[in-house]
Amino acid sequence: MKEKRKHQFTKEIKLLMYGFGDVQNPRQDSAELLEDILYNYLQDICTKVARVGHKRGKVITDDFLYILRKDPKKLARCKELLIMQEDLRKARTLFEEPEMNIKGKKRLTNRPEDEKQ
Amino acid sequence: MLQDTHKEKKTKTENGPTKYKKSKEKKTKNDKQKGTSQSSNENNNNNKDNKDKKLGNKEENGENVNEKDKKEEKDKEKDKKEDEEQEDEEDQDIDGVYEELEEENTQLKNKEMLKDLLNEFSEEQIQRYEVYRRSTLPKAAVKRLVQNILNQSVSNSMGIVVGGFSKIFIGEIVEKARDVMEDWGDEGAIRPEHLREAYRLYKEERKCKYL
Image 1 (tube, rainbow over the protein chains, first blue to last red):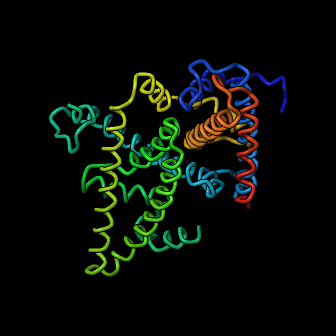
Image 2: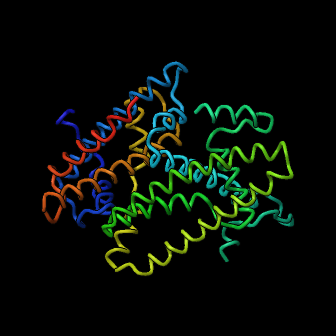
Image 3: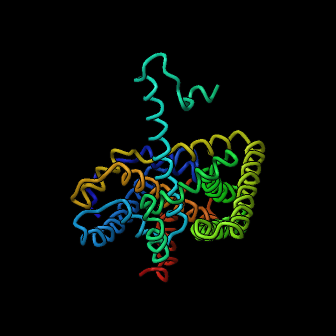
């Protein structure tokens, strides 16, 4: 680990630490150490992913899911995030489509704003 | 993994879905039936894990993790059942419906339990819970970081995935550090020593699970 590396994520990591059980203002050195630990972990995972994806020539999202297969918590969360991303994308296309339609045309599905009301 | 590819071959005639799209089809099916979503359920399970830690209940945490494993097994069973349903309709339809109803029942129960729990929270706990739900690593910076490590372009979904599991990783380390603090009898803010010990314990636990 290079000691000269600038710490990019300090603010966000402090928030994460508070959310997971630390005091409201976590210590600066703890946050920096946690960022270093995170870098180490990501390098570990990414080298494994690169090895898996090397055969294909490039790395795709499913390679990450394969590497995480032994960790049920993380795997479940990643799958959930991908599904949510799909749902959001669909919701956005539904949201934008009616605006492009002609005025008198009926909408087949409700827009998210109409559903909330 | 082998099971998954086998399932994909079976359903290739439909649309050739990937692993996560398949569970999404299941979820849209559930949504149509009763308007609840499975994703929120898994989310609830995750949240319950962390909240129970905060409340100091380690046993429940273990149970929740087991619940999650059972749920994944149930999901796999359900996938298999759905495949069979398409072939033989009458008998196995009933079994499939029963399992779906059972699972939705547990979903509703979990949602209710979560609501009740949230009602009992003190103000400080509510604040912490809100920060827990909303905080995340910045998407652009994570994407850039992974690009630099892999030396190739990274898609948006990869950035999201990496951000997601790094949040969980940080959570595991911080929770372990809290346990270590309890063991050592320290109080107050988490110190670097606790984090180092937590990271060491984390690696030790995973030694046996490695390839």
